[in-house]
Length: 198
Image (cartoon, rainbow, N blue to C red):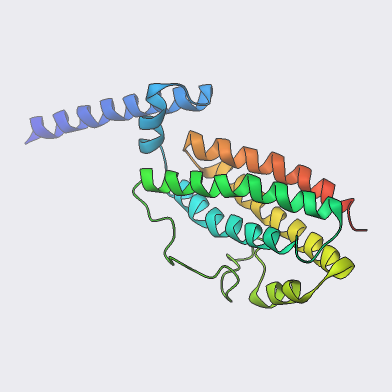
């Protein structure tokens, strides 16, 4: 029995050392070739899953908001921003979904959810409530531009908070790289939006 315990401990220690080695290599290099996919699959934690599961509906609502713009705004800057937001976040939703699939986790516990439903405010991370989305849908022209920009700034700030949590607590190199991309892109868009509607 004692030999078994010692052997098991040694095996566990070796596995831990090997795991740390591959994890550190992935983190420091930002991900390399063939080892990256297996490291990304094994090297994730609960915070990575929370990030991906939370960011998917968050991005989905941003895309939903962006799709409202062409029929309600004539401001070229707002139209351009909405188009860029949709083009950036649609592929990120797919990337997040693929990561969850690789990790063996469900993309969402509520398939087919309405992202503007009450309770879908993701615990205060910038999501719009059903009432806010209804007001935005009913607005047009300059009023819509003002509301949309203010709401999207709040929405982006929530995404940045979520991404910063992932950077601090996550372990997946791919998820952390995406989180940093979200921080950089959305902070730049916030600066841009603040200049659109005074």
